[in-house]
Length: 272
Image (tube, rainbow, N blue to C red; front, side, top):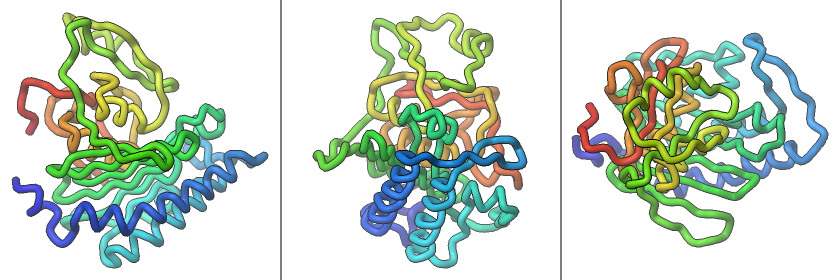
């Protein structure tokens, strides 16, 4: 499908201009809390949450409502509070993870991000990921490419790579690894190294050609993956379901849970 047809009334440049100031504001608010003696609460599923999650989400959601007032917003903390929009019959909606990697936030590893993703017809087509601690910003739009900026530095176009001759660089979660399943998935493939990372930065490392594959068998929600998938696919990579090898899609279930998936750099096969 023609990417312009998916974007419709949106334009990637227009979305960037409208949303990046709010991303910067939300990042600054979250970073101020990160650098303080913040309190950690527990949600009903026992996962951690801080004031940074709530403040960043409020800023990001307000900006998204300004951009497209009628578009539903699926945001992690709102969902936790019971505000669950029905997106099964809408052509497009936003996915927001105000602090992706809250455990990294609490553990002060620096590897936490703010994520905004746009879904159209079940596909992740636009994403923004910002890491306030390092100042890394990634933006990608399906069919238009992806770029990275660090702090006040220049914007640099990025692209995923084909697996190098020395073997795959495998990037895995610091807290949700599954060695046996990863070993089975990659059986027969030449491996070079394993890199451990947190949050949606794993997608970004593949999108910028620093890693080749990210298998994820542990639980994730759609707001965890949408922005990263949009950026990676805009950079030439893919994100597929681990069992079917079909593209990871969105608005799958009312609980917004993902199946196990694998993020790849440039592959030789077509993904549907």
